[in-house]
Length: 472
Ligand code: SF4
Ligand code: SF4
Image (cartoon, rainbow, N blue to C red; front, side):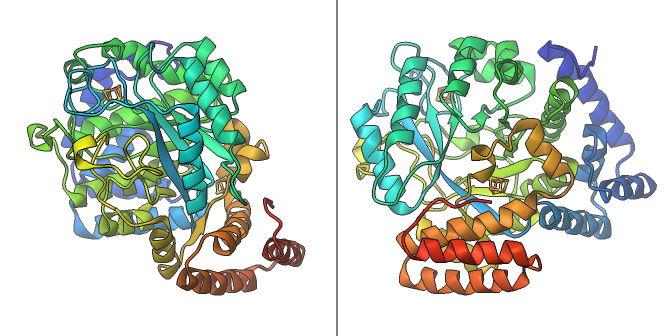
């Protein structure tokens, strides 16, 4: 029985409700009157239900699709302005006891080099990341109670926060580790993590069990109920995601929106972020064996529909996607991207040799962080290294409150300017610095609030003189 408030995964992600939603969408495919009603509701910018979102996803009427894409762009601008937050993944260890058939870290893969970073190596990685200009990391580790126990993760977080090189510092560590206990989530909260990220991979239970034949991850309910435990443990921000290509995308869209509705119904606050990874080529994994792959057009439509359905939720795209897909996705709703990423363990300070490959997947966007920053600036975005909300306590429900009032861009814009200035002073190439400073000037001229503008100018001058870490 479908119940968004239930504690039971089978009830808040009800297979029957997903099937009924798919049937409802089939019966109403291209029903113009219904599409117009949904679009009218969507324009109120308060989100859509999973069924309404699916109707928009399935729509093939050209002029309605144009409207859907335009609305997604508008919502993106209204809520988040023109800033794009940058982050990098940091792989701590690829030891894993699970058997996920789509991931090269699965326990039976003997081709891959297994590696776990020591604390000294983490310091080197973090120093290399700081020297690129990163302020925000997402740490990744396989599930392995012997090699990667929670104590190792906690010690690593401490090392990351304590590593300071020149003007560099990591100000927000998001964590992507396996589903765990409430006690362990409490420990992560105490360690000062930002968002706890856990991809569902697929909401289709039967497929999930087949794709995860071995190891603790096989337990669908334990995995699906992980965000409930994390939030019960006091973690304010959680990040959802499915791996597109594992199951049918229509099923997944309904599933992830039901998950979001569940968190909102039970905790009064939905997910902080939704990621949209697609299956990629990797060692011992052939994406051709997954026959649910989605083309770029469908992928971009999913992003647009998610943007409309959950306007308050940040959306993340990684370097799994190439430059042109990322460019279009940014317009349609993405708010955070990774840049200059390495998906191998130790990849930032040590050159990965092909015979020593420890990567989780092939990167499609191989540009450096400076190239990505330059590209964003040339498209009119403000690359942002901001971590202000987390550090000012604007998290969880408090963050959503600001976001729902469409006020978050009042913080995002000024903080993007301040953190971009730090980047330009410390790490940018000559060309990026030139364009960046011009954009900052332009943005300052658009600010009407005199007090805010004066404060920003004052802080920008401090940054120019060598001080760091200003935030609004
Ligand atoms: Fe391990 Fe995660 Fe890869 Fe599965 S997806 S094999 S849990 S690292
Ligand atoms: Fe993110 Fe808050 Fe900074 Fe905006 S102000 S970029 S929401 S941390």
